[in-house]
Amino acid sequence: PDVLRFQTMLVPRLTRALDMESARKLTVKDAIEAYAKGSGEKRACYEALQGYSKAWELAWPGIKHFVADAGEEVGERIPDKFRDISVSEASPITLLLASDRDEGRCAAAITMELVKRHNEFLSLVAVFLRNTGQ
Image (tube, rainbow, N blue to C red):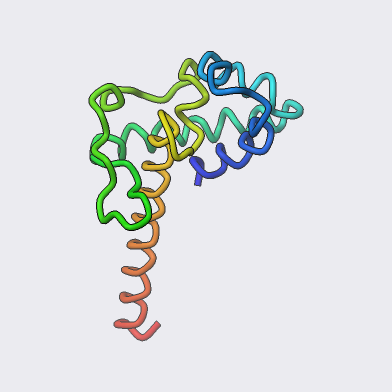
């Protein structure tokens, strides 16, 4: 939930507000400070960032491919330059906002992987409930 929460809090404010070059120079911390509205939303962004960072730490090592384009079964293999990165306040904001190009593809890949895992978990719960008559 924190990955999606972080993305939905900042995406509307960053879309078309920055060109890609400027966005790459903007750290996550600077983006939160500049674009989150009020102390409550800033606090919520930082809390969501903690969850995003933990999800990245746990899930990213197992993700080997970007999201597949339409008509492809498997997406492009994630290049080595993206393999050993972590998410923090010092990361460029472009790394955390899902996109279909450049480093935003990392955020798209992890988001899709987490959604897939969530759906698989819900399917297991549904089977369990059905099998136990609940």
